[in-house]
Length: 197
Image (cartoon, rainbow, N blue to C red; front, side):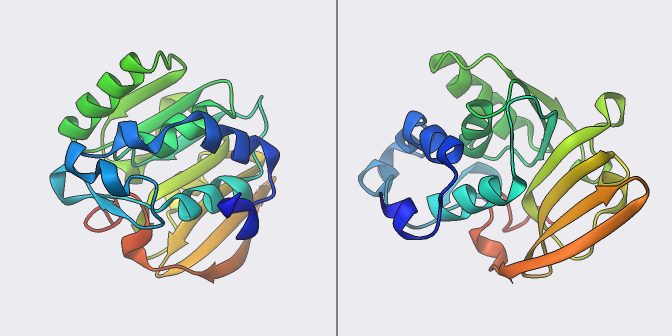
């Protein structure tokens, strides 16, 4: 209800947020504030975004069940788990092995089986699985990520925070249309504090 009151209207996103318990993705000492509208610290100097930020990025991605989705920056796995409730399979790239191991343990505990994570540098995406219908960056960029834009399918969309601005990039054949959504602080993006590409 709080998310609805703040502009989240996509029923698939709201349902996914309801199904995935944020408490499973934060440190035990942060359980008392697991449901608060704030970012929380993770291992490797990273952070878990507040729920509204994640819901907003999922909503503006315009996801459907049959979309082939790439997520850059797994972090705690919270956003990845939410995405797994919306699309059939989530492909994800994360550069920290510790975060991958922790996230995969959480997915196993929660019986989430439609996520595939690759260890690597998110700047390069996942060329072997491209093209993707949707790409969501859970990390901050200073400029549009051209190598990721190249991995979008025709009709695809990339959602990212570019230099403090939440943006979408829509691909029609070989043309890319950029759209600014709203300013968004880099430290509110999951894995955004030190994972910039």
